[in-house]
Length: 244
Image 1 (cartoon, rainbow, N blue to C red):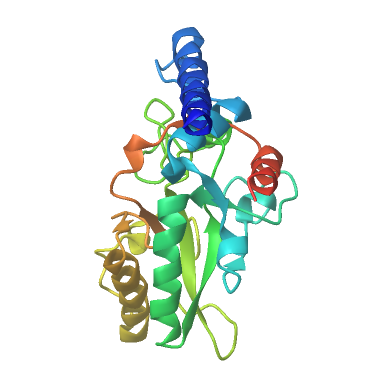
Image 2 (cartoon, one colour; image 1 turned 180 degrees about the vertical axis):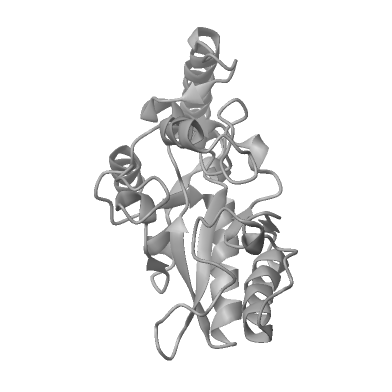
């Protein structure tokens, strides 16, 4: 009986410390110029995930090995024409997003398709930088609101043919800021329309929502419930290793 009471007391102390640590953060955190609170301290994210496992930022490739990564913002092959990320070999998303993405991959595999990711988690500071170049919220997230990418709840991706390993033909290339990239654009070859529909149907089947202006962009319906993050890929990688 004494040992049970001791364990219970220790458990209560751990929870109190976690809650106290997080409440201390919320009280001391200063809002940015848009009035938003952005988490920059990896220890705060760690505290949150201990209280709510759904807030874990998981390594997508480690959890879904068959997914192909083509992280454009770690290269100059993007609309900014510069490397916005350091050299990275991993991307991250919240646990519910990764869980849903696993189901998408299994579903598409039966149809002969795989997935290639262009971007998932994006630090908030990069969203600010993008907005300076493209101040159009149809194609770039307004930092006054933040992005689903900053919350680990949005993803940019396309289909690949499992037989060839090559991307299937889509309406446009990635980050094409024109009407042709819109989900409603219909003046396209029937094969391209089919490919776009296969991707959209698969993602929507497992909880993701399609962005109307970008055929490649999908997000969780409750993405706003996750905090904005501006922590590095390196720190997220270390946190993942420590949590195993």
